[in-house]
Image (tube, rainbow, N blue to C red; front, side, top):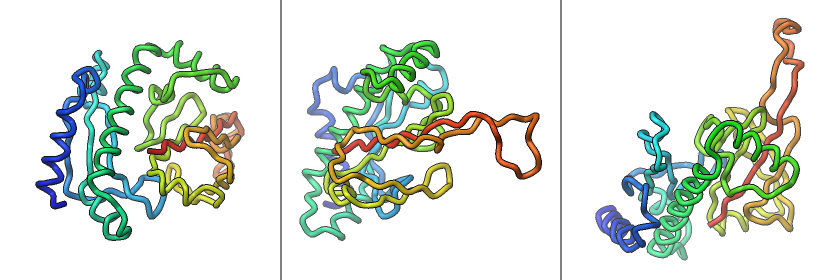
Length: 229
């Protein structure tokens, strides 16, 4: 499927969704280029849902998003996999990104300020129920990576086939420019948070800082969350 046909099909699919699903999505932007996954080498990003610059700048409600689709990534995967169905993957990717928007919008309504974010963080650490994607109200450090206090929350946006290949293997990735490896259990489930204590942000003690010595304050955890479509 060439770029023009792909873009036209993407817009037609977006127009077919009920209005309430698309509420707050400013546009569906189709890009010619491919995009690599920001954290996992060898994986392409087919699409993503980004907060609208208007919402980022003003915090205005209702929450607004822009959905991005990368035609070049679809082309690259089609070349690698003769069974890759561009039409089906486009439908699946668009649905996935719209779901992201709906969840983000629901999170904004549920978690309105720092106190509520603090409470959700405490509930998460206690193993209690929290809204999907609640950590996205923390500080966005880089694509797919948020900080809440000293904890880092890393989303791995993967296709089902990519996830299936990773289950039961050692996954290498990059987090804040540093290499990180994790073993993915054979019985791992999508949306499950994998927690690595001591791998988050560090709160240094300036009084004890000495040249290149590492900070001696508190250290958060890294939580890796596979989001599989």
